[in-house]
Image (cartoon, rainbow, N blue to C red; front, side):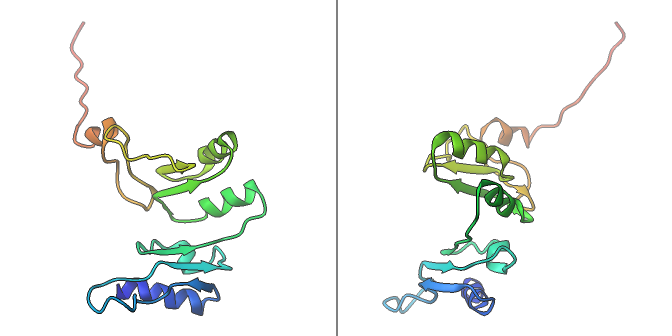
Length: 147
């Protein structure tokens, strides 16, 4: 909770506009809860845009066109997951270009036992679930014998 609240403070200090949330829920006296928080006017060089907060914080970054959106999405050392909302053909075209391990198009559920889950770049190591997840526990061996 303190770490997430620290990111919220940092977002304000870096110039992002706090639209809603940003603190602890007033009606909860105990626990480690943080209000759902929304930032606008975020630029991709801000830490709230570049680091994985893992809390209820959304940083909205404006983009000019599809090229700009892909550039922004890929300008990160992380690549766990993302979401795209739009016409199916356009969203799929963008999904192919974004370097993330899991991409949700128009709210599709990607958590299925046969779907591998894992990130790109510095978001995780390997894959979980599906055939790719099982392959993480295997070692391949090639044995050559005279013919």
